[in-house]
Length: 492
Image 1 (cartoon, rainbow, N blue to C red):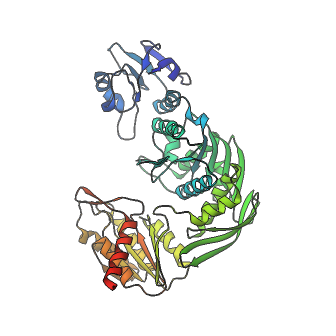
Image 2 (cartoon, rainbow, N blue to C red):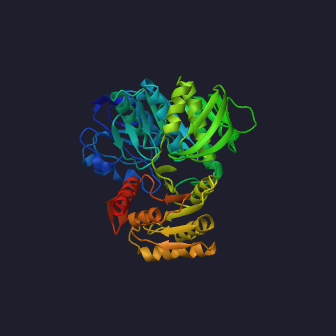
Image 3 (cartoon, rainbow, N blue to C red):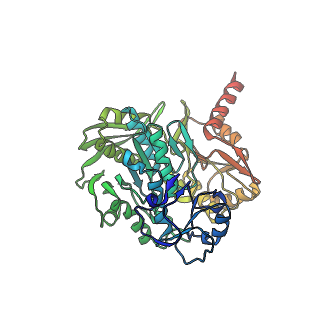
């Protein structure tokens, strides 16, 4: 139980009625989960307004209700009015969990791309140094040995504070977070100050209904991180980086790979393809000096590595531990080398739209494969335009496309494939159809020619295949290994 007055100590509020000298059990923003002695906070969301569920919360036992709109509440409970429920939730949650961010070194990473890879690289570097690290991100949250599935890149503020407290209980010293523009806009990381705020890059994305009205608003929301951190780490090769830091209140440290002056710089960039290694090499200079290899292909991975190294250097990680981490790092479903032999290399990637596919194939083409073989499908009950565009991109780059299943949901697979084929025809690509995804993987392996790069696209880190309302277990890595084993057994 927590004292209500204590929970409200950093919140501007009006006591509408009732007493502040009461104890509450927990804070809830979903009326269905409210239990006796809970505080219920009503939030105006993008699709629903939970002020309408206040009677349900009271019926379930809420003794305190926090509102941001005028609501008539006749029951004998405490009612508190705030200007912004989302902001109040963040500050109340921080107090409820006894300000866990003060006991951690917190690092928040924002940017259109690179957040996940950079956070995993930094986690690997800190762990090489013997540190214990918690992580909150797109793929999941990792706290000690515990993996928590998430629905948003940046969870609700209550969940952020709860996970920070769990990290401390698990012995973590560092908390790494991917911080989305939506998370910043919706006050999910209010209530504490990040030790480090990080900017990777920015390009137009997440513009539209229920997200951002314009690119300018998207840019502004990203910039908020640098008004709520002590040290900002900035990629000055990104366009609009000056706008991101325009109103910053933090110290700034820079990194990049261009001619302009930065604190840490990458140069002599090279593409490396060896027997069981596919990645990049570069020289780092400035605050760090040395030659580095990273086991994730593509120029962007140089930037992600450089970003992680810049943060790690501020945290006191040795260059040797940074280098060891980068040579061995893997990010599930992001340019992930899953199989390699004298004939082919098979890469798993989460790319599931036109731009992501184009960037992936552009990156892989820089390794000059003899053939590019692309395995992918289209999600059911989704926009047809995306299928046409993905088909056209695949036809432009790939020597062979193998169409297969990827969450067909309630749609017929043949219908999805026909839409993709329409796009493939625009770029005159060559394709075959193998509906079963594992069989498609097997086909690519069995018919591989020396020098092939096989791209297994779309599922990435997802652990299910959704067909007619049922989510069946699925793991790309497991499917690849099973396909390899079946081919080996057949060859014996």
